Length: 379
Image (cartoon, rainbow, N blue to C red; front, side):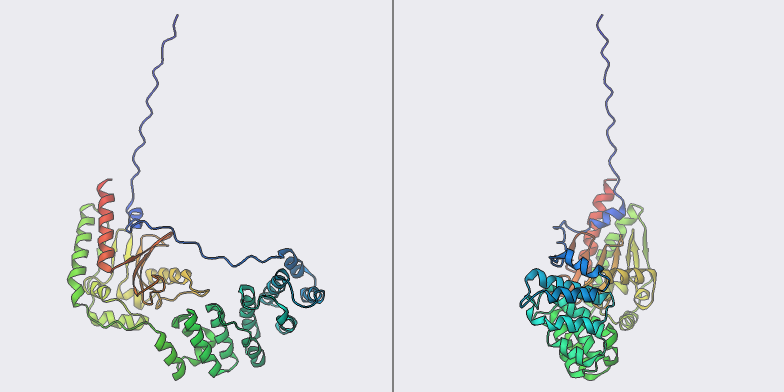
């Protein structure tokens, strides 16, 4: 007797995933190639030897014995062992003067006195010797022409701590040329005593972002149209929209002065239409956020500092936050120096894995509106 055929049950079709407004907001920019990972420092050859030196009962004595066995010029590997051990020992609090006397006595025998490992040692050395004028002058002679921005900043700070004002000003100019921002120099503890000195102020003013003349008239209607379109669409779909009462232009400018920033004219125009707003999960700065430590302001400050620049944190005056784009890692920014944009000052939408340059605030709102309309319309 033939077996009865059993009809296979059809598998239920998977339900389409609903895209939330928060996820949609992340798509408010064209896909770009993933950001390139930051360059890692070159690997130190002879890592085992470094570990043995650091783990020795008397690490400085172990490094002394290591050097004593080498006659003449060190090999590349031997040089990396010495420099790697020395900068780690300095960071660990070993006697800075004794260690520097040892390493500098063989400085001429090192095969690479300008590379990453040598610069790391000098950076830690400047931090370790404090205001020791003679030692700072000795180390200054070893700073290479192509020194990193981080080393240039450390050098300027060491000269300031040692009271070498003229040399410090030259070092400040070199640091700016290497990519250190005026904000980083103003915040450096050792340079604070010079904050009001004419020479220091003049150098920083020359390097500051160019002033943005106040002229919001050409932007008001353009921003209003983009804002009306996006809010109308969001309300049609029942999404969360909050528009705060408008600010006067005088209030906007006073907030800029309080925060020591400059806003672009189209964002100034927005604040005269709505002094801060929330679109779904996107929170836009109002004047209160620039004047006070609101939750949004604190989140922005933490994010901007994490961006980092040449080994040091950014500050809000170097990368002005305009809106949180729905996620802790996603922000709409104004880049007054063009450093993040890689060119002229302007708007930047910086997401977790990519960044997109924008033509202005209306461009950002229009892109957000278009993406959100597509997503919400298919749910």
